[in-house]
Length: 313
Ligand code: NDP
Image (cartoon, rainbow, N blue to C red; front, top):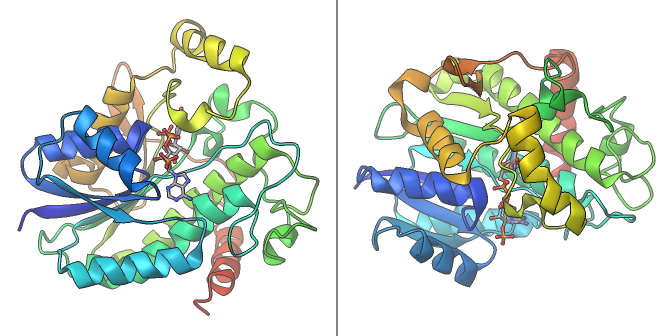
């Protein structure tokens, strides 16, 4: 059997292009973990992924029951597991009202963080036994988790505050992690900060005992992906040229996919606890995270609450 990577949200954008890049090596089989089977199949064919280089397994991260079912189905498939890539995300920057997962969590935090939190915990044992002997668990981060750049400082900035809303399960009555008023753009950023804190916790808790490499990355601004589907039309027109010519943070979907594929498979990018970024002069480098992401006491609290919310403790 070829090395196998599970990639969530591989039906478009970054996940699809990483799947394509991995499959093209001929050394990897990609399990596309997607909520829309037909869309994923059509996407894989459109980018020319060879038949047999991928399979599609249903996963809806906005339902913990679906996450558990996915893990059961994956285990039953008998496939080996060498890399788990938590890539799927929703971004609701124009939402006036919060939306919720099947379990009643605010949708961005519930999908981007809690769904992946359960998934990674349930698959950790399989990863530990990876036949390729260099297993990786990658959770896609965001520039909002590193404040040493202009884009990382654009308001509303991520801030998990005292985690009071999160401790309550980000429900309808209290949908933000910091317990403040709902803001869709901030909810996304908070969820990504939670993802990056989780990677650091996993590294500290499990790396030495399991040998699994845990890492996060910011692949660059991929201004044309479906992530911005909920944004106003003018934004969608102006954002790509703005990123290309003003901030120069723009990266094509294909290049971003190659970057993620490298973090999954390149022997040089095997550092656990790393947060990969790219610069035009030096290529990949282990970037500094924001003060909040580096707050390990807060991350430990986030971990405990996350475990309770997804029913692991
Ligand atoms: P896309 O919207 O193109 O891709 C997001 C993927 O997530 C889609 O495949 C989508 O599925 C999937 N998804 C959403 N909700 C669920 C769910 N409930 N269950 C399963 N899958 C789900 O956006 P990107 O490719 O841009 O985003 C990929 C990652 O990159 C995200 O983690 C994002 O935060 C990150 N990122 C993106 C940047 C950018 O500039 N675009 C910059 C930095 C990070 P479906 O096709 O069915 O909608």
